[in-house]
Length: 110
Image (cartoon, rainbow, N blue to C red; front, side, top):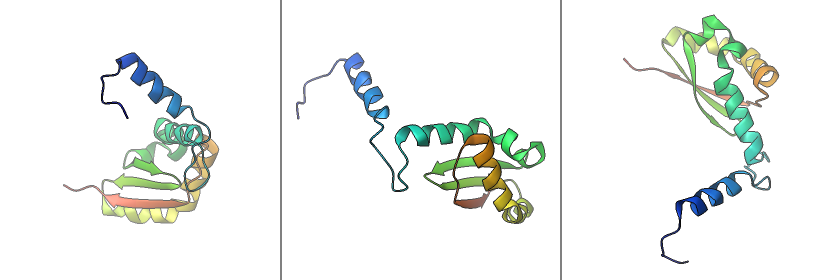
């Protein structure tokens, strides 16, 4: 591997090419493009998927494959979200095209 400087344009082209590589898959068999679309759908269409009331208290933090990490502003919402988990997963699939198998709920600190 060469330690010589590489032009910025060349480096960026390399990164873009690697991001477009459809053959790269995660452990669930999803390609990088599929993962990016799901992530964009979850974060970009969150309020549409969960509704205004839930979105006011629950925020998506991370989508790692099929595991969604959310943060709630109060422990009461953590309990509520556990009751709504199946509905949440279904809505994210319908609205965002995201397959979520697990929801990890965290309570926001102070």
